[in-house]
Image 1 (cartoon, rainbow, N blue to C red):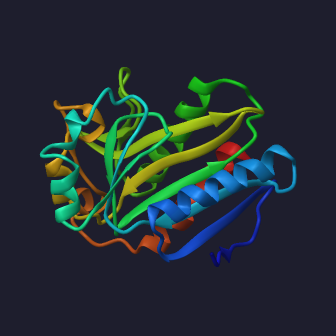
Image 2: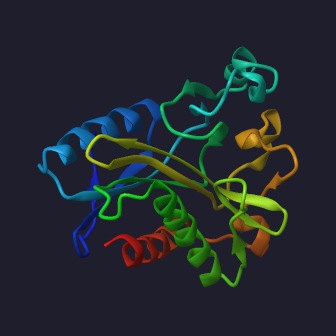
Length: 219
């Protein structure tokens, strides 16, 4: 897989996977980077990408109940379905959504603080667009108003190495979420930066803002 390498800042190397990266490829890449990070063969690394339509289900799911009409139906719509080793429940990834996969050796060995840190990154990005994001005391992720704009699901490997991460809806086709119960949460809807602002925002611009805020938090 070819990676577009960006200028490193501090001790984190930021990389962008070009085009639409199949979920399986990104998952394989994460596992390899985790292995290399455990051996200190690479620095902390922050991957940014977009996926073609795919539904993923995390370890918190007890069954396929939040996949709506089921895996076969979702695949017939043109989406892949994966049972992932991340935390969380069912969610959707697709074009127009920025997915961030931090492969970090945590300096502060506190899983709760790490999750709050990821949420704070997104909340700061939203503030840069004059939107007030917030995190729910019972659920992981970031909301604007009564709708979720970013999902978070992570994995911690031995050595306190992180993988998986967050997904921010920028100009995602939100109808894909209608086929499932996103994150197993029925009482909230799903939104995007495009919907909240009422205008198009270039993905590249949002990515740069994410990188800036991420490095401020995790460098």
